[in-house]
Length: 524
Image (cartoon, rainbow, N blue to C red; front, side):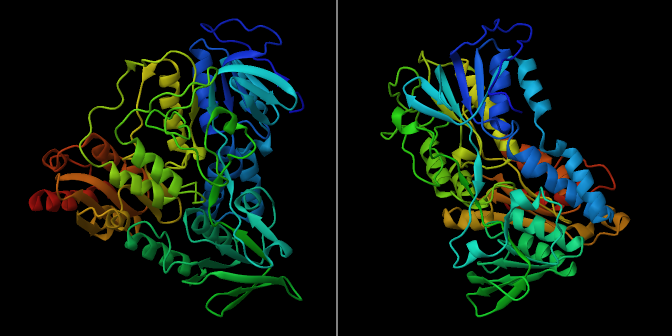
């Protein structure tokens, strides 16, 4: 898109637009998953809304992350050729053209401003030299790949996930730095299409912050594909070789490859936005700290305001744990969420809670500064960004709503799928939380025999003090589908006595949760 200022057509019920307006009720900085949702919903609610985006409207997920990676994984499972897989990937991503997304925004009544947005003072935003005023500001600038400081890495052929999911090249030999969700998915994709893949992961196993069995089963699946796993080793030095490159590891090993794919985490985009002028603490590579309403906190801990610049008292409760955990998670994998920091936050939030999603009117008039999506460092997934967007919309419209992250799923879409929700045993141990575990293998279900799929396991975790489910993990075919009931049970704090009375269809993988649920109920 070449135009700098795309004026929108308002939907029914929204206010009429004024051509060339320079004041908006809400300016959304960043047009990714959260930004799109916030902008469209607020415009349809009658607010004058501008969406500022300097790249593609839609953000990472449809062009550089979730959609292209899942397309390639599907092609790999189907046994398609690389050429067909690339053609299909490019089709589902719209060939990196955001015309449809921009049209959707215009249809919703949103004005799209192309360029880099920077706050220059309370209630004032500069977009490539053009000045606009706002009452509320929503920051949804997302995240970007973090490249580790490895000697010589800048001198050898390197991809981040952005390049790996957009270019047509198929390296003969590929090194993947990082054994988290993105690294594992990319390793399986390239191995399936014939690349000799090596995964380098500094910890002793894959998916470090999830239940150990999940990383073990996935490691076995990758090895079956021919992937070389170098666990417990870090990249030390890289240099060009006679053919391709050489990567020296901390354990003394050497890997030869044609390209390195960096999947070692992501960092929030917070720099160069001018948020400091509003009293927001900004640190390079660190997420914005938000309270339970997704309002950005000031240096002193209160919520940041937009046009007025006045500080507000932050609501008490679980916000401190949420914000602190989010800050600790900077630079982690985003697509399936870095499991560490925000799962720690979940462990801190498993105590009794009052209803948090009611719609009590906000007591404070005027504007504010809000944030949603990866930039908050909380539960960094596309679905979590959508959830935070809904929270922001409610609060901007004056209907108080608090976010609850206890049951945000984390999924790795490999074959088999890895699914986790709530608190993992690893994070519970770090938080000093006593869990009771019960689990079982999927091979015990009739569906496993029908599918000829013997890989898989499910584990359920209950808080020993409260007697409620607080976490779960599963590895197996379609786990992202049949484990959703457990996410609901965790979020709703459903009693185990009720869960054990649920009847599952036969034959399904969902039956696998029945025996663990009965075991937990009998022990608590």
